[in-house]
Amino acid sequence: MPEEIVIDRRFNGPPGTANGGYACGLLARLIDGPAAVTLRRPPPLGVPLAIERRAGGIVVVRSAEGVVAEAEPARFDAELPDPVTPEQAEAASASYIWFEGHPFPGCFVCGPGRAVGDGLRVFPGPVPGRNVVAAPFVADDAALGDQNGVLRPEIVWAALDCPSGVAVYTAEAMTGVALLGRLEANLIGPLRVGERYVAVGWHVRTEGRKAFAGSALFTDVGELRAVAQATWIRLA
Image 1 (cartoon, rainbow, N blue to C red):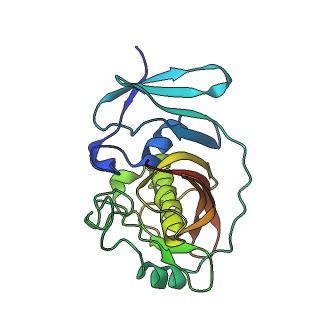
Image 2: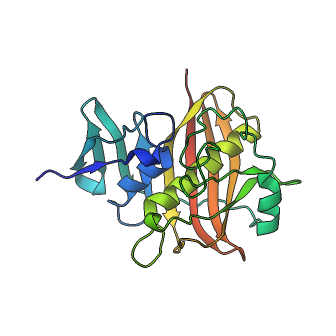
């Protein structure tokens, strides 16, 4: 039978479509090692998406409307900022720019409209004296992990998504509504259900309608667990 995936409606970003990082993470599971996923259209929720495997390890996902995303092996070296302490992240999160006026308040990752235990509720705010945003990150729903309590890869990808976008807007590097266009990530070590981590995001540069940013997840003691590079595209 042809391969397919279905994105559960819980994992939305904008209304009616998937959180970009979560969708990218589902595709990345089909790639061996670090992956890069390009989103061609907003990933739909609750419908079968056909998987097509191509030469070179490339994976294409299609809906009835056309190509949704393409995934491929990635090789990248991200320039990382110094870790942020849990105390700094907690203080920074209090200044999250979208506690009010969030463009998508129901976003699974950064939406303040999601209940505790439902969404991830990652609310990155600016760290004083540094060009990064940061927030605590705890996924305390056992359903988000495997039988050993390790967070599923797509949850980690989701947590890497929004901090980069928030960093772009906090830096005032983009106006209007933007959506994730591409995400490259390297999952370096396991993250566990119920354990506290620090999510960090930073703006790299902006070129026209595109903004480039990075994100990372650290342990409480500053050990890197995952890193990503993102491209955000402002809607015309």
